Image 1 (cartoon, rainbow, N blue to C red):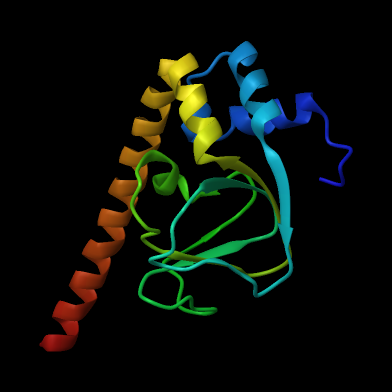
Image 2 (tube, rainbow, N blue to C red; image 1 turned 90 degrees about the vertical axis):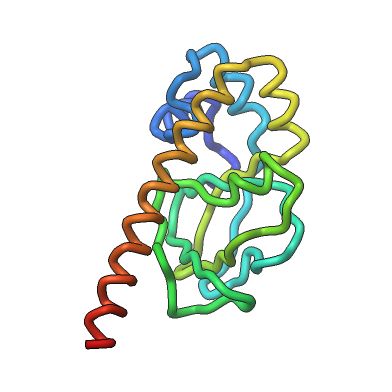
Length: 159
């Protein structure tokens, strides 16, 4: 992602992102054109719980840790995300503050998609909304499994 990435490369990345898997290539082309390149050094806070959110991110290179709670943590992640994965999507769908914190585990490059551009794309391509709902459902199920694991560990500790 050195500024020389092509529209084709962006489309190929987007085809692998669950949020966008239902879109046709011609629709992905519009989405790819709306992406902006961003980069952060290692151990950088991208956003913290409670902050307003205005973009989602798709990781191109590096790793991002997601933590819950009031302050970003550099070690206590509920998940580490790698290239091809995305985060921050809830903030572009509602007007609520961030529900988690995101920090870079290592130097990271990503594409950002703003709330404003997303809303325009949703109006133009309603099937994008279906893909987003499907992706949110998968993420919610995964989070439920993590919570179940922690509940089981807590129950064992209480014995």
